[in-house]
Image 1 (tube, rainbow, N blue to C red):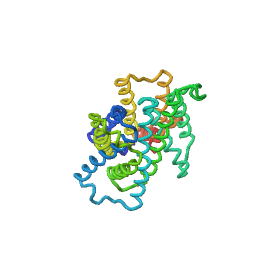
Image 2: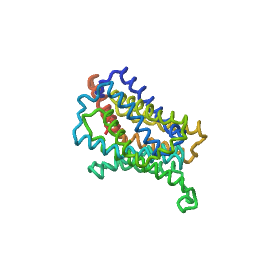
Image 3: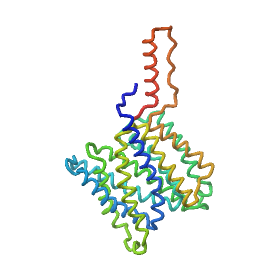
Image 4: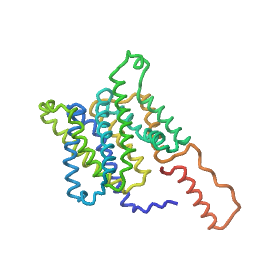
Amino acid sequence: MSTDTRAPGTEKKGATELTLAMVLSGTLGVFVIESGASPFNVVFFRCLFGTIALGLYCLVRGFFKNHNFTPKKLGLAALGGVFIVFNWAFLFESYEGTSISVATVVYHTQPFYVVLLGALLFRDKLTATKFGWLGVAFVGLILVAGVSASDLTGSGDSDYLAGLGFALLAAVFYAVSTVITKRVTGVRPHLVALVQLVLGIFLLLPFTSLGETKGLGGDWGWLIGLGLIHTCVMYVLMYSAYQKLPTAKIAVLAFVYPAVAMLMDWAVYGHSVSLLQALGIPLIVAASLGINLGWSFKRPAKAAAVPSAADSDNANNTDDTDKVEITSGGTR
């Protein structure tokens, strides 16, 4: 029996917030490309404008009072920020070699690297079921990547291979940041994100060519939008939604992001995935949900046949069946 005490209205509001946040995420690639700036410049100004917007939000909400940061938590937040900032740079770089659609789907293999890192660094148990889902995800990744024999022999598109590599590297960096940041407990996620954005400004300054911004003109609006919309507004919506939703709904709604990204890529740039690549997308989606929700390849055990009993006994049997279903599809 479910013990979730969330009010239906609260959960509905959370679903709306997270859906909107994922829709905004899906437009990220268009803002990056339309800005006309290099990937490192884009990330630098995302951090700069994001810091201003998110910092003002935290100030107005009074989040700086009783922040609960300790030197250790601050250090972990900063370390996670190193990986999250370069993860953005690699993801934006991957758009140029592949497409928003392919890069975003490949990028969504992040949960599998979190599982592998947990097994390698913290000796988390890698069960046969998790290993199976990793296999499913790998097959999906191979299909989505669309790499041909000519690509591997050097006579194909080297830029495409480089783009795939950047997308994979971005996913790995995101996974590392997730593993680190999860250990920053008792601190508002808004403040953790703000620390990472501030760090990003100073971290990326040596890689940023400020001279390139002289000719941006009206394209500054895209960069400001990345900081204001895709950082501050999106984060506020996500963090609010996470408090209202069960893990199952969060895992499912997360796939609004790649769906919208693929739609935008097609609508704005005319890019679409091939039939073979399209076959790999549901495999990655299924594997990600399987990992996040603890799905098992085994069917739930059927209740043993029992002699006819009173209504109360039948109710007890129904409760047992519910428990089996929840166990097979529960959260980690």
